[in-house]
Length: 305
Ligand code: PMP
Image 1 (cartoon, rainbow, N blue to C red):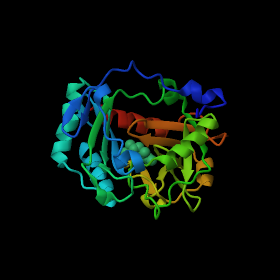
Image 2 (cartoon, rainbow, N blue to C red; image 1 turned 90 degrees about the horizontal axis):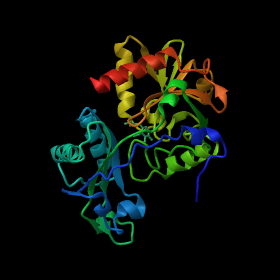
Image 3 (cartoon, helix red, strand yellow; image 1 turned 120 degrees about the horizontal axis):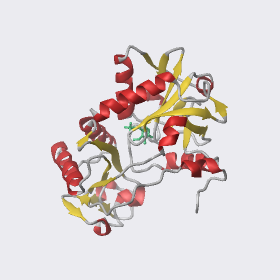
């Protein structure tokens, strides 16, 4: 199946990946050449999406907020009763080792823990050898011009996972909920989708948290609206408060989005990016707002400092 946009918007905004390099992949204690990096087809990570992951980023050779990412990984694993077979220190060392082996100063890191291989049944007790995998690469989610112009997004009909079914706080290997919304936005000619929770409230986007600015106040949905506790979200909240801005984590509806002065998304991969249109409606004047630009700049400085 090919999920392609009928409109030019999404294809125009597809990032041009940097020349791909055969980066080495770390699997459970060893570095492998890319083509030799393999795990069992019986791994429940593959069979059932049974596992957890993190997306991290390194700037100038230093991993941004490594401790927070490890805490979130360990919390995700705890929530699905998956015991990570390494210590936090061992995982941290392995990440740095992989970055160094690949000569990456500024890169993206995908850290994965699978349930391990087992029988074809669901029972996690019948699995063994959880795999810890570290993949590193360059990152380029959107072209620079989209950071200047701002993104256009649409609301997906697919609702965000109900927290009582699969809590979005768990960063699990099962991202089908997000992928279904991503398919919708791609088919509508956009690169990101706004997802609502089971109450119809704003939760987050398929791979980013969402913020609004109204009357000089920064607003974002609370974690119990069914969102991932984004590391970038936390950093931006801190930066905003430090700059004297009032920040409120409060229930938001699409109405709030439509009448916002500014809107932006945050995520490890995208950092901070303005949203200028939602569901074909202009947000504010339809250009990235001053508070968005200021926070984008502050985040840039924080990560490169
Ligand atoms: N929500 C979802 C569903 C995500 O996948 C991500 C990306 N990890 C985010 C939000 C942003 O989180 P972070 O800032 O930690 O990358």
